[in-house]
Length: 250
Length: 153
Image (cartoon, rainbow over all chains, first blue to last red; front, side, top):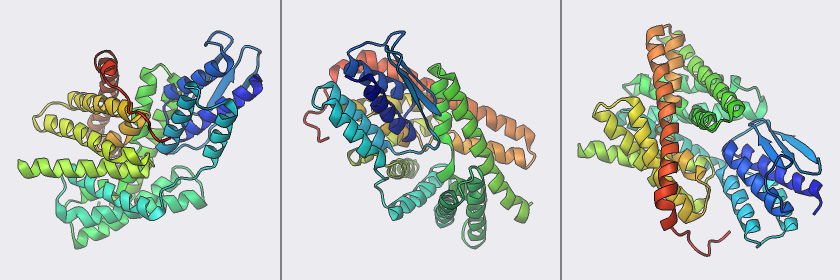
């Protein structure tokens, strides 16, 4: 088979997985399994891939090399599991290479399938339940839910229209913190927990956990990039809430 | 005690399920993901309540969560991340991380240093728990579990 086409399709598979929030090791694994099966060659000095969070490189024994660049990542685990399904069917011989390429191209264009209202509903449910299990009382529930909802909406709006990283997080939590503070004056007791409800939809927890996972798997570059991203996001969240505290409380 | 357990069970389940929906998890895995997250959080909070430190609580929590997650992933034939990311959301060190920066910005430097160390312990604990669970699962449980047949694509 044409090695150009193999590399193109493998890079596409890797790109979809990485953009949807899969970890580095899994991407490398899937791509190498696809290449091995398609070309009939095992991984060797002439035949390998190299994956970081910002770029994927693949090389084959004819000297064919190519890479793609990844700019923005989010979490869409449905796509990760679909790529997995495709590579599994291909390995079992249920699909040929043509079908794999077509399926991946269709998958790349697919939008997130959950409607916006459901997403917003889940965001406020997330804020409320995290606030409760961290020790909050039921009287704080409306304030925390609304604060989380507002910060997520503001974040989404800013991200879609302005596309400035970190500023969106800052202004989002600032707005959420304002709403949480205002509501805590009316109904609510523990301002600290309400503020946690406001930041929860945006916290970089997955970035941090994935960073440590990458570091322990010896993917030092990906690990450090993700850790740095987590630190910067956490700093913007802290700054957003602290602005509310400085303006009205301290 | 009963109301304590009930609150934590219900709301950690809800937190995991809602995060699973936000992450666009495949539909048949959403409820299972909720149970996985619930198990992890109950392990975490029960250890924390008995005054066991953050590192060991995170480690045990991640061990439980990852072990159940690996089994569920094998049965349902989906990648393991589908269970791990929503399941870990209540325990995730991001909330503590935000607190560390908040303390830093209101100039509580000592507090902030303590909380930052907590973040590090918790993150390392979670990651090591995952790796230990992986090893245990691979050598003891995996050979005995058969994936479901005839899964719709």
